[in-house]
Image (cartoon, rainbow, N blue to C red; front, side, top):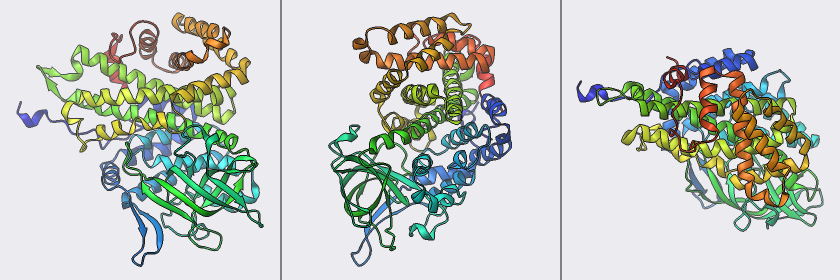
Length: 530
């Protein structure tokens, strides 16, 4: 074998849905109407052309132009054309708003699958899409504001022009919540809003993170006399002038390079109140349910993308006389990755179905738990996948480095791990019967480790309340592992379910690949088709 015979190119040119047997089967069960369109989308996303778009959008990141040639303030951000092509692809699939525009059964599972497929190729473009989607149910409660915008939200067209919203067929929405002095403690918001005679407000202050600054509008948090309040702040004022939002800089952030995050100042920016005065944080909490679901989906997508690259490389690359995928320790690690990826996908779809059916246990309890667990697993997972490619993974020319840089963001955005763990406890405190009923359901599992974990969690939740906060992460982890085990037993191949349960409960299973995975070769054969 010559040196060139043992070089493995990245996994590209494959249909992302057709090569994922577990997702395809799950979609046929949950949303059969979506199989055909998402199979087409899986082919488009998996193509070499789309992989090149992702590379270009991340190689040539957005550039800020604060002033025009004559010194006028414009705060324009220039994106590579590939960025707009990726946004147009996503929007064309109806993945931004169809969950609210239709009542088709299975629509949330279809959305989750489409978002999951897209996130395997380019994660940055999911950010404006997530914020736009999450804004819809909040705005819909205020018909006088939402009515004129409804068709723009539900449009499948993408218009990347920086022009007043009235001139555009569709809308993108960003968010501006956190400030330098507050971080996760939104009650410390210092930005102020002063009501005008016509009921509008002028906002003065700053935002430390102002996501997707060229969005057509942002939801921002500002303080009135009644307390923190949510506002709708468009990029242009009703008379067509650029709103008084000064982009101070684009963040030199870790993660994708395709999207823009910024730091801004408001100099009497025009805005409309959204929701009740002084009730801005509850308004944002409602939005956060949707954005946190998308964090889980996005991180599950990173797991799948890392698995496909690592498994493809191990199948094709040889060392010490045989393919890497045939070597016992490599098989153990890869099979562990495959189990983690499938379990995350199963959980993501179940969460999405919980949103469709309005199930409190899955929306308010399991969503923050899943965000904590899956997003943190993505960090470890992406590092492991990169390591399995060795030096070829540790270069910016390849996709694994991009996955690794992207992995931490979902653990930070929309609530850190500790915030998620505490939100789980708050959900338990508000609806203890819901939490206990969920655990009782887990306890009916035919698998003894799941029964034991459900019983241990029930003892924690009904024990000393003073000792519970320090174990909040333990509670979230246990809930997720029980849920994943039950879903794998119900929906996955017996070999995958058996192996997941054998390796996730008890023992030294925290480091990926530390426990032997039963039937590893069979699990890997089923993980990636073609």
